Length: 467
Image: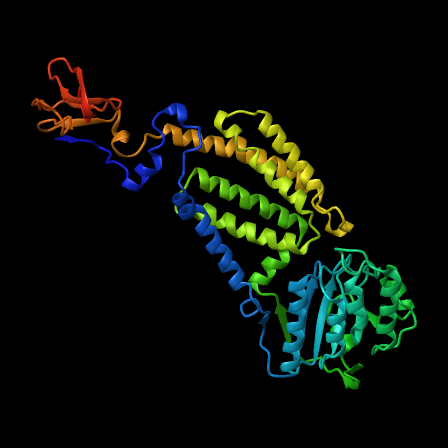
């Protein structure tokens, strides 16, 4: 009997390492079966993706209310920032419905947007004009603006307020993912103003400052803080659904309406830089899981990131050819992992990654263009991942002994009884209690106690006497 200080690794680890018979092939991609790929990468990724999609439905992603709110007389507050995409547009509709159901005194929508993105502006405008609750659109704080689709929403509200240092307009493009007929947009905006609840003689087709908007009567008044806004609203009479309503908000409790967690995820994924980074993170997770299959954590996170990124790209005006070029560029980094150096595939991958990133949103407005810092960070992060992280992980795996009987090669044990080299042995010599060392695997079955030589035969050698 030979007692070794370190027990063999589990059998499942032995099967995962069985392809690495020598250190020379340590940096090669280990062969994986389709079953291993499904178990460790694809299935966890798809499950996480389905979980995200199921949780992102309106039943789970509805807006959340914070603060004590009796059934009536409350001041609802909702922030609509960033591009108005389908998620935020649906959230605004739900907030209006919730405020109507709770008979809120007023709904304040703080607006900061460069425009819309694949949303129906006419539906949102009609919903605001049909609302049975007074809606106040507040463009704040300093430095914010309401352009494109945001301008149409602001003009449709019974009360429009701007903070100091803010901008209203321009009216076009209404949606940032395409071209807009300027004449049609101007005509629609004038129809909103003429038939709206606020008497207004000027239409902000171009960008105007808060001072200009106040001087020309485009806004109701100016307010830089929420307290100032509520103070000016109290006692004011506005028209709601064709009826005059006097606002009483001096002592009304404030209730904050917010996007749900998964709504915030989907809304953030429509930002070009976020969708782009999620794509890279997802690809990195899949590559890591293919090289180091385990419980599927990397594959699950990579699959979830890919789902969010693909949702963002489906909403954004994406060039799918450029997106495919980005994916090809990432995959091109993989062959140089075999050699552990920088070669032509790495150079091609870097060029393809940069070219695909630049061409990713060719027809988008300036608000939807991929910033240069994102491209530079993506190239640097990709080089760091493949050249440093993956190479170091592969070398660390090569330095570890294989699992099972192969893992006992070179380890020292103590012979406490008869040493049995193999069940195929022709002779089983009795060895006194001495230190034993496992040699490299060889086809041997008998052992000489006097010389320590190996006699080749069928079966793996399990122990060798050290003189």
